Image 1 (tube, rainbow, N blue to C red):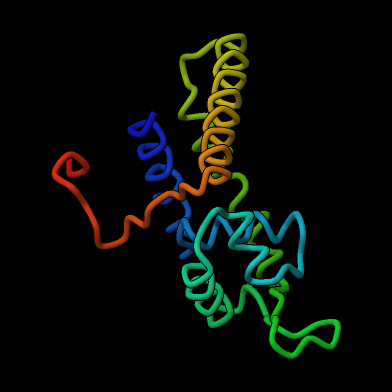
Image 2 (cartoon, rainbow, N blue to C red; image 1 turned 180 degrees about the vertical axis):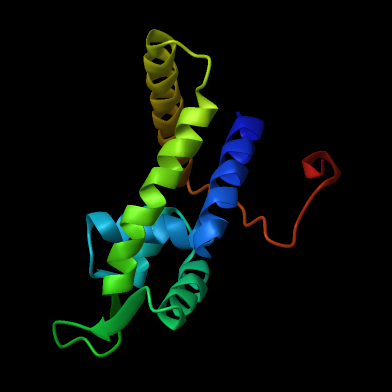
Length: 155
C-alpha cells in the first residue's frame, strides 16, 4: 500500500508540476475548493498536516497569488485563507490532471475491481483512523518522524 500511495503521489506530482503546483499546495487547494475561507488550523487538520507545515505552504501559495489571507470576525490573530481568482482557475487545470493520474493507476482493472478496491481502501482507512483515535484516547500519540529514523524505517 505504501508503494502504491508513493507511486500515485509521484505520478500526480509529475502532472501538477506542469502548472508549477506542488503536491502540498494541491492538498490545500482541493480543501479550499470545497470550503473556502478556512483558518490555518482548520486547513492543517483537514489535510492531516502540522500547522507549521500548513503555514509554510500557505505563505508560498500567497506569494504565488493562489490565496489571500486575512482576519475575519474581528479575530486579529487567526487568519483565514481565501482563494484568489487564480486559485479558482487552477481547479479547471488541475482536476483533469488528477483524473488522469487516477485513470492511469486503475488501468487494467474492471469496473467491478475498481469498486472493490475503493471499498477495501475506504475500510482500511477507517480501521486505521479508528486505531489512531483509540490510541489517542489512551494517551498514545503518533511520534513525530521529521529528523528521526530508525534502521528499519530506512529503505
